[in-house]
Length: 306
Picture 1: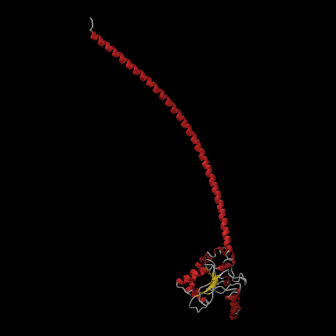
Picture 2 (picture 1 turned 90 degrees about the horizontal axis):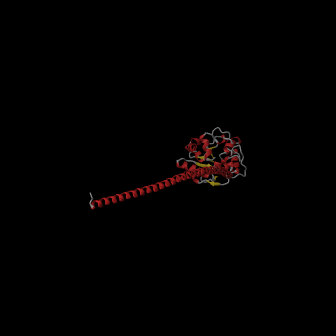
Picture 3 (picture 1 turned 120 degrees about the vertical axis):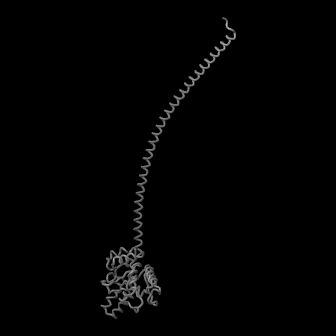
């Protein structure tokens, strides 16, 4: 049986279509295969590059670690060197400071008369030529007799003025009746006492010239009202004396001749400037100036006017 031409055309078209589809699928498969190969090659290249980069990174990290360690060691060594230099510098500074302090101390001591803290009552002697470096007139407001000139060592005068001012502020009648006396003045005074009272009695309460603390310009005889202007042991029964006992040390003054001293009779009116530091120590330890050795007293010379 013979097929119709239309059927034959249909079969032909179908065959051609199948061929085209097969060709297309084949081309696509080839393209896909080729693309996969290319991508695989690229991935393999990238993996190789990654391995190379990782290896390089490890090498760089190792190098950095070594460099960091070396730098740390160098910094540590440098720090030790700096610390050593600082330590040496500190030692030098301490030495310089010590030397400087010693120089300042020596310079200060050269400006202070060492005789101001020596024990003179029948112990050391002041020559007839000894005169304080500088004397200041005591104002009338502090004197018992304002017509009499009284003088006190200039460097110590502020301490005396402050003490007498504070006594006035505390409503205590406290005045200076005697202060600096020269070698000649003391000689004349002792002569008068000897004539009046006899040598034995005079020696009990009056120093020979050259042995009087008054010649230093740092000793004062103090008085208060109600005693008829007399230096008497009854002074210790007054409010003025009690004020001195409680406060004089704050201004550098101490009682030279307390009861039972080995030099003169008890003189509650006679006070000597020895510096605040020494006077405070004597007050706090219930000692007196002449109880100490001269060597101990000399250690307070540098602080005499502090």
